[in-house]
Image (cartoon, rainbow, N blue to C red; front, side, top):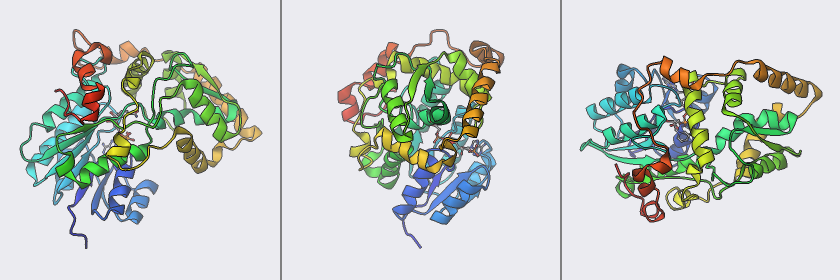
Length: 368
Ligand SMILES: NC(=O)c1ccc[n+]([C@@H]2O[C@H](COP(=O)([O-])OP(=O)(O)OC[C@H]3O[C@@H](n4cnc5c(N)ncnc54)[C@H](OP(=O)(O)O)[C@@H]3O)[C@@H](O)[C@H]2O)c1
């Protein structure tokens, strides 16, 4: 039996959580993986050696049980409404046990005055958990994941288009990190709290890429020409609602539209790429084409046949026929907390300060 500290991974079946779990297991740590339900993903984690904890992450009683006997934890709020609620429950339960270190998954855009409620909640969550004197904290704040582009692989494979509301095709505005590389930074901090306590890291991929380059990489893996098509946020909201597997709530879609706006403003390119994956995660950041290659290899339905092409065309028609969301109304209808003077990231002096190259190089604690 391992004598290493036991680690709780929340959102363990999610994009980063599953890799945090497996990378910790590879290092010999005993891991309790918090999942919503048992399925193929949790079975794979159990086969890798994780203890599976099935429960509701938004229920304090479940989180309390999950924390029992844990020494360290990965705090990862799902991409969903009520992030602050999830994080409050996590923080309350963490205070009741003998935890020594927490790694939080935050956001590159994290700022007190951000227009996105989800992002402000991430910022507040990080402030609250750092108030504890019982345990130390490391924040991992990635930008726009490479995984987001993979949502439209189907359309690229069968219709030859890469559709997203990312602005002009020739402007390099993101250095997309893989889920595995983001996890490697979290795992480094969970493995060695003494070295990483109090620090914030912003993992990125190895290079800034333009939408045209992203389309070309996807095309090169698929063996066909793929053209970038800049679409409106309205069209994005239709696509996210129309096509499975879409688990995005209306609220989440409204926030993604704000993140797409930040993308076009170039916020994810500010002092990117960083060297966090190499320096902290201890590995070379994966190139985007290699991420796409792995995703395509796992999805046999991307191989083109006439039937799949017809299905893709029907899906395209379905997107056009799906009513668009009124993104402003979604927020006002749901009693979203609004602030009087929201600021996009680059208009916030605080955010700009924490993203300066020398601060990034020194692994600053968030300016907050
Ligand atoms: N995507 C981006 O570009 C991006 C960029 C920066 C930061 N982030 C941050 O990344 C975080 C999300 O991380 P991620 O993408 O690794 O996670 P994720 O893929 O959204 O995974 C969330 C997991 O939590 C599970 N879950 C949801 N509700 C639950 C409940 N009530 N009880 C138990 N489990 C529940 C989900 O289960 P099911 O799978 O069964 O539904 C899923 O496996 C967010 O906080 C977001 O702010 C994302």
